[in-house]
Image (cartoon, rainbow, N blue to C red; front, side, top):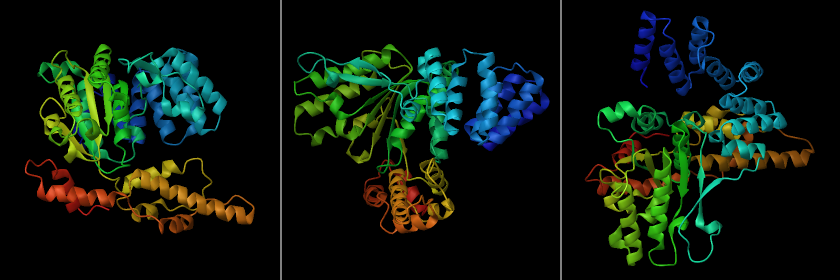
Length: 443
């Protein structure tokens, strides 16, 4: 949301300061924009008018925790769960708060209570951190021949991550919020204008820059079922079975909406048919086109997200209206995003004087995966020092300087290839975003 829109909400509240729904809307919007201090102030004002304002206390607790005031947030959350023992979302945030206090056992209890109250609150990230083993929901696909095995199942997840968990990429998140998320959240308004809810978006960019992370966060924002596919989930040695398996996945997605089908490396499944030697590959692309068109069934509230490092290899028919008609460039993280990624990667590590501003300034065009490699390298340097001295050595900027000497951004090769397409194969303007990114000399 633009600053102008925020100011419009603030002006409306000046006229009607006791309008609780409007104030809560402003508070939630500020929270989504990670303006936690301002959001907390709005939640407090709502509570001053009505101490029972729905969601205001939990919103205030979320902002308190996001601002790093862990003890205060825990007191607020424990008060909420004590008074409302059926508030699953409060237990999820209580889980996060207890984890920050390294109370893993207490966090496990809170997490288990949350998912007992609402299974939709299951979080793969939290389960991994808590070392909780969960049995995922799975769907059976048409047999490859013989009895059903793990190879004939595709896992269905319900991500609880959100855009607040994605560092940087603000313009990208705002674009997805407007084009994808709001139609799911306000369907009546969009249907009134004849706008379809769902459809397809194609995320493309260098490897390791967060396309899968963005897709999961989008699913979390709309509270959708998430079916993640790769080519191996579809391909089959028997003629015609791949098409049946693909149809089964779409049929399951339509059976319980909202659903998001995420196809990683979609160029491997939906490559250009004229380059395919075997008819089976061409018919699989045709089946994907049919399913995305919803020719036999409606795809309302089914969103298909494709991710690729090679958009130029995708069949042109897949990028026509009604299919992947929204094509979005996911660039390497910018300077502020790199600072945030490094901060997240350093959580729980012994830290000394680590200058994240310096690191961000020296890692232009590094992907998120490159930054992970850098942090791992710095840890190895610090660990080597610790082994020599016989004591724990906190991470310092000097460790990063040593590790950085051995690294180069892995995105450079991709950007050189993309630049050629932007220069010589851009008649339709498909690669304008790449051209603009390279022209801006972003670090």
